[in-house]
Length: 496
Image (cartoon, rainbow, N blue to C red; front, side, top):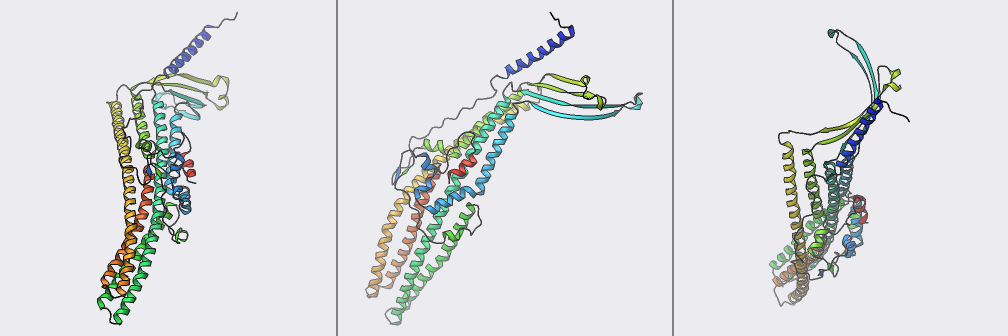
């Protein structure tokens, strides 16, 4: 039977002690993480919208895919093309995608703290001691090897930092969704502006032509002695006033087209050829499902982002709290040391070291506890910001629903007014030619017709624009990303 020597027994006992100490530390690493566990805040929401769901608005829950691609309900191929190109080329969206990649990389950095670090190194040192000490010797030392360090996450500081990084990544994904929702709505709103301005220009040009005919008729009657010069001048300033409005409308049209180009990530002027031919203002669908407030809050990316920011800040309290406790580290090194390069890799030059290390900050002037207070105060601020975001989302949705319903009622009234004004103008002109009424009646009817037609065009565009704002307030225009999925690629792909 073989027996170990005393030195071998001592070495074995020491090694066993080190292993036992390491295992004990690993068991401690299973302790719950310090700091508060995150609990999603409960928010009291109204069961239904305060605004009445009428004029095509229904409380039915929107179908997710239809809401994500809401622009298809307007049945406008040009708008669909512009939205697809904006999702591919918009610079703000690309910036948000880069922020998602940054957050994913930062999460990877935090996760790396779970694992040991291993460094390799080599050195060659020449030393000469002072002759004043009586030696004055020269020494050469050569070293090479590996150093390892593993800090055990006993109290959960690393776990909390990873938890915060996870929440930050999710918040950046929600921020990307928020950028996408706003971008697609802005593209649609500017496109509606383009079509509305084109309609108003068409109305103004047609009215200017009609006023030109009225002016020529008045001049003829004046030259024939059938009317006075006041009628001629009144017809002229009415015509000139309408003509003066047209350049203003064309300037607005140019601005809207240029803004669309920038939203698509191209230079101003690039879209002019595509949009030069006027087209009708997109018409809203007959029925629009708006759901209930709870649906909106669950879906809106800005609310989801605020909630994830709260989760991240809650985890940071735990990171700060971990500094109150000791740190446990396993250290180890393996390498060679020699006084000459020839002996560096000989068996006798082998050197190693392994063992645990404990450090504990016993006094810091209260800095650690003050940092915990800082993170706690920030969490309270983030909670209030979340609650404010929820209220702001509800306010926006309520306002857009009210605006949509009100503008539809206004447009219906303007349709009736425009039809009546057109008939009144024709009657006034016929009676003026027959000498039955004064020319002032013609002017009043003609100005009213131009005003109502222009207001009708504005209102028609406003109805569709308010529908776009409803979709935006409901969080439409994006698909909720799956956890740890490349939200940048998904967000850009969903608009195609």
